Length: 316
Length: 267
Image 1 (spheres, each protein chain N blue to C red):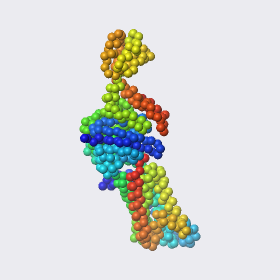
Image 2 (spheres, chains in turn purple, blue):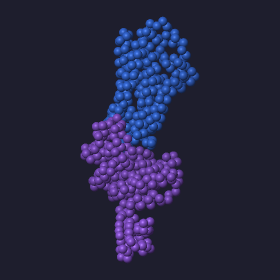
Image 3 (cartoon, each protein chain N blue to C red):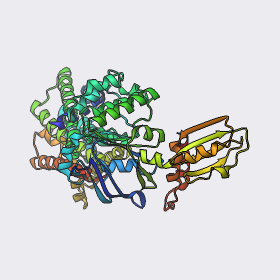
Image 4 (cartoon, rainbow over the protein chains, first blue to last red):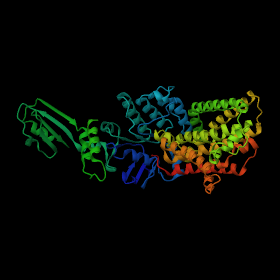
C-alpha cells in the first residue's frame, strides 16, 4: 500500500479563542495536483503552515510522505523532499537573487536551479529589493523546486504572475506531476483550480466543506444550453429528467442547465425554429458558489468578510 | 555546517551596520583620548570632583576607578564604563533583537525552515553571526585606543587593555544572547529590540542603584555586576568568577532562545 504524500488527520488550530482550522481530514495521494480552495481567511494558510511545522497544532496531526509533523527529528530529514512557496514571499532586500538562491542551496541543495531559471527568468544579479512582485514570485518558484522535491506545498503561488508566466507555471506543474511530484497549493482563483488540479478541497470558515475530483464535479454540474428562437419558448417544454434548471432570460432566450444526455433536448428542439444554439460547460464559478454559499453558521467568524471574499472569487 | 552558512549569510547583510558602528566608536575613542592631555593640564582636581559625586552616579558611570589622572583610569570612566557597557551593550542587544524577528516578520524564515534545518541550528547560526561583529568592534576600538595613546605620547598597559577587551567582548556576547532570546520569544522586530535594550539598560541601572544598599543582591541579576573595567584596565585583575558567570549566562541564554523558538509558533 502506498503512503499518501500528504495526510492530514483531525488537524485543529485555535489562536486563543479564534478558530484557525478545525478537525481537518485530508489525504493527497502521491503524484497528484491538489487545489486547496477557499475565500481569504478561511484557513488555507493556517493549514499549510501547520503542515510544514511552522505552527503547532492544537489537536490532530498530519504527515508528509508518511512522516508525522510532530516527530521533530524524522520530519527534519523528510524536509529534503519538500518544497514550499509562502504566501506573499519576502526575500532579503539587499541580497541579489543569485546570492539568495546560493544561500538556500547551501541549506537544501539546488540540482535543478539553472533549468528552472531558464524557464522562470529573474534579474538574478540585482538585489531583490528591486524585484517586481512577479519576479519575486518567480524566484520563489525556483527556490521551491530547485532541490527537486517530491512534495511541494504552495500558498497562492500564482499571485503577481502575469498571464503568460502563469500559463507557463501551470504547464510546469503538469510536467512535475508526470514526474511523480505531488503538489498541494492554496488558491482563491477558481479558473486556476480547474486548469491545474486533479482534486480540490474546499475550505470555508476553518472547516473542510468538500473534497472532489474536478472532473466529477464538472460532470455532475452539467452543461449550460442557451437557445434563441423566433418562436415563443415555453420553459415547461424543457422539463425533462436531465434538466437541472430552465429559465427564460429577459431577451426571450432560454437558459437551460442539463446534466446527462441530450436526447430529450433534441426531441423538443424539433418543434422550434432555431436562431442560435450554444452548449457550454458550466462555469466553475457556478459550481463552487454552491459550496461557498453553503450555510455553515458564523460561529465566531466574521461573515461579512467571507461574503466579500466570496464575491471576489466570483470575479476571479 | 549549516549553522555557519546561516551565520555567514546573516553577517554578510550586517557588514555595513557593523562598519558604521565601529567607525563611530573609533571616533569616540579617538576624541576621548585627544581630550586627555588638556584634562591633565586643567587646574582642577578631578579626583576630588569625582569623590563629590553621589555614590550611585559613581558606580554607574565611573565604576571602581579612583584615579582619573592616569590614561587607564580616564578611559575606564570615559569609554569603557559608560560607552562600552551601556551604549555598545545596548546596541548589540538591539541589533540581536532583529536576528530572528526580522525573518519571521517578513516570512523569509519559511524559505529556510522548510529545508532540513532545525530551529535550534537556525538560532545558533544567527547567534554565531554576531560573534565576528563583536570581534570587529572590539578590534577597532582596541586599535583606536592603542594608536590614540601613541599619538598623545601616553603609555598604556597593553596586556590590561587586552583584558578589558576580552572580558568586555564576552559581556557583549551576553548582550547579543539577550537580544537573541528576546527575538526568539517576541518574533516582532520592534518588540524584541525594545525588550532587549530595556533589559540591558534596566539591569545596568539596577546594578548601579542598588550597590551598597540593602538591595544589592538585586544587582546580581545584572550583567554589569560581573565585569569591572576599572579592575581590569587599571589594576589588571580578572574576576574569574565573574567571567564564568558571563560565560555560563551566555550559554544558557542561547540554549533558552533555541528551546523557546523550537516550541513557539512562527507568528
